[in-house]
Image (cartoon, rainbow, N blue to C red; front, side, top):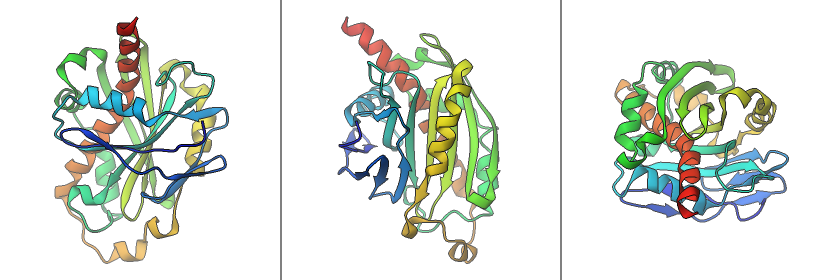
Length: 258
């Protein structure tokens, strides 16, 4: 389904759906957030309503944090939406943290390294509706790796989904001029390797539009601030966790309808 591209914005107290960006052939392009990524061969776009319903239910009626999922993809032969594996793209605009500037290169390592020291269980319990907290357990972040030359970082997160088994979230974060964009692949831990060629190609195809690319000259003239690191970290981690649990919620919802 390579048309009707959408984005989902989750707000307090509910979510709003923004105007749709465009698809260029086999490429997804977000005009609002200024990036493009190749749609994996043999994969299709997940409808905005499927993602929005899952995240809205998981966060409950009064979430205290705004999460933006711009688009999602899953294998074209999947019969049901939000069945593992799937890919979500999360957007973290710097303006949401009260910033009118880029993150400086000095800030990158500190934000990334704090991923492994974060209390994942606390983040999950504080931001997922109580009735769905049994859908996952044992959330643990794996050590991140910074690719400074390409202004991105790689990390992974493991969690147990009782209805599915061990889940792996493979993530890549891209630093841009106005936002940090994370691309997550959610898959069974034991099957992650078979999807990595697809994921690596998808990540390798990612490009910011020229006006949204990170500007190192501009960044060099700006000062860093440790006070914003916890906010960036929290939103990134919550986005990773919610995205992973969405598939479990979708499975549970289908069972309830039967």
